[in-house]
Length: 162
Image 1 (cartoon, one colour):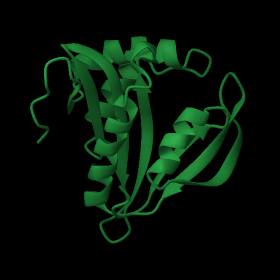
Image 2 (cartoon, one colour):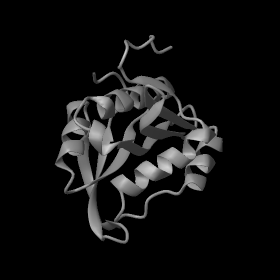
Image 3 (cartoon, helix red, strand yellow):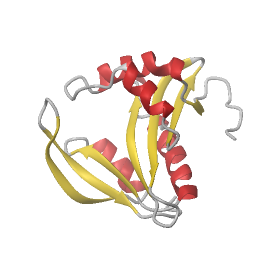
């Protein structure tokens, strides 16, 4: 359970189907050159019971979102971060870190390593991921389309890394 936020503080809550249009609008701002997810894609991800999606809410406004897939059998679990997005005007304020911490807490309960893809030119995101135990394990050439940007594959072993 997330504690009640102070006035003007960001609150985390489960992402709801009603948030899908706002997420899609943020996607267009954040990932305009890399095939941003439409609202229906968010709604579809929310229906998958193996996914965990969370919203960052500031005074009733969705300012960020994140999602992770909890994969594999209980004897061989793994996790994959699907997305993390924070509105441009709210970046650099710790919201991405807060969203990521929520995803990793859920992954740690599920067990197993956590994987993600990140643009090779996104140093800020890479720094955040490294700060919580992720390491680069591979490169996906021209992964993001249609821009053709490369992606690092990053991995964090299961367990507490905070």
